[in-house]
Image 1 (cartoon, one colour):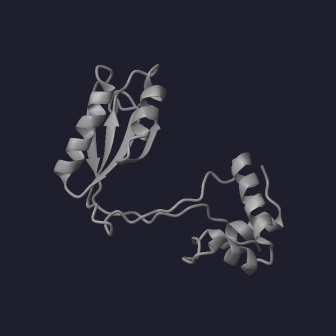
Image 2 (tube, one colour):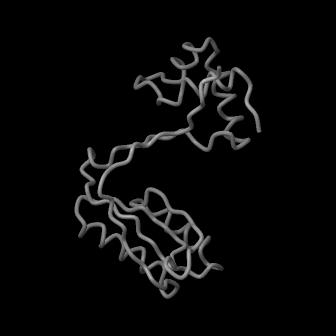
Length: 161
């Protein structure tokens, strides 16, 4: 996969985020000298080819009142993890869900689901909903609570030259 100079300008214009206006794509297109339709077509092509995965908001959950954020981790049978992960990922309170390889013997977990809540009790209640969906499949499980927010950034290109 490669990008041309125009795609590079698009990525550079978007890597700090979209402008907070009613016409963000029009403003980005104008800033790099492209018609808006060309910008949108190129973004879709980059998504289709895998150069970019998505354009999405990255909210600060703490500022939204969600101060108890827990990554629930689960030991799920490998032959069920994809199906169960899709079900868990579709829950309205799960912001992301994915499979990762285990690191045995110390780390038996292969299914991860991020849950946000205003209190730890709320996160635990949501975890129980996940546990019900996984029954009787899950083995070990845990919740890893966030202790601070990390800077979230998307794709970054190195400056040429």
